Amino acid sequence: MFSGVRSIPDVVDVLELGGGDGPALVIEVPHGATGDWEFNVVASQLRGAVPDDLIAFFHVNTDAGAAELGLAIGQRVLASRAPDSALPSGPAFTRVVVVRCRIPRTFIDCNRVLGASGAAYRAGGVTPGVAPWITDEADHDALLARYAAYQTVAQAAIDGASASGGRALLLHTYAPRSVDVQVSLDIVRDLRAAYANPEQWPLRPQIDVIHRDPDGVATLNPAAMRALTNALTDAGYTYAEGETYPLHPVTMAHAHVTRHPGQVACLEVRRDLLTAQFVPFRQVQIDAERVARVADPLARWLTAIW
Image 1 (spheres, one colour):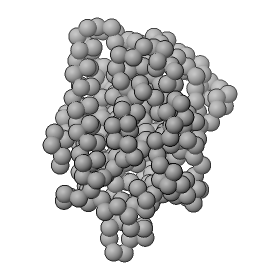
Image 2: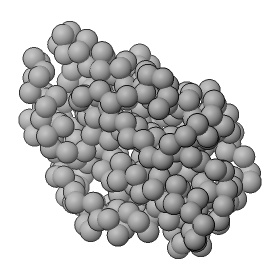
Image 3: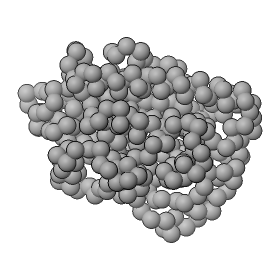
Image 4: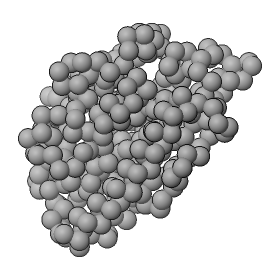
């Protein structure tokens, strides 16, 4: 395990697969709090009021299935080292470290650079770092302490992977459609109105590779992008390159990618690919077979080229 990379209750879970001192693959899931209980734990600790039925927004906005997908990818990457593996041999990752955030982004977002203006977050097409309903100073300080603890672990893991000659994959999932609703105290009311007719909103790509900054500059090298394209299309998945979001400086993903050029990639996977049925406003059930189908080409890419 890398120095300082350890689980912290209600902040981060760290799972290490494999072992040894060789190259490591770190899979970071910064929006990994997906269960009712995780929302309720934090909500019950807040002194200030939050919008009624805010858990409905939590379930639309959190990255359900990302942690399960990350684990499945890691297991396949390590299995590729077996002599009878069907996966191509590639970088000899001797271990995989899955870093899963347990702080609901409904309150503070661990994939955000805090302190940016509302206009900057909107320019990046992303929700704000601290939710507008966090108005109590003690609540803000408590959430900020958890955020800082998470960032320490995540950065140490990604730095450790880079130093080992390994790589990091920043993994997200998103709701199937791009619903244009601003985060405000009326977020639940506005979301329910928007989802009354979901077909009015554009369908997102099955997989979006978030590797171009706001100026369109690519951060994945062409060979890696070609290999990912081939792996996804061979498996029957459609993909885009930053169609949903740019790799924007208000995100921690941008910070990690620019800190370790060529060693960090960020992906969004459409949530309905990982569930038997996507239903907004409540916790969804992740389908292991669907997860496995998405994990296979991503593991093939990681072991073949990257």
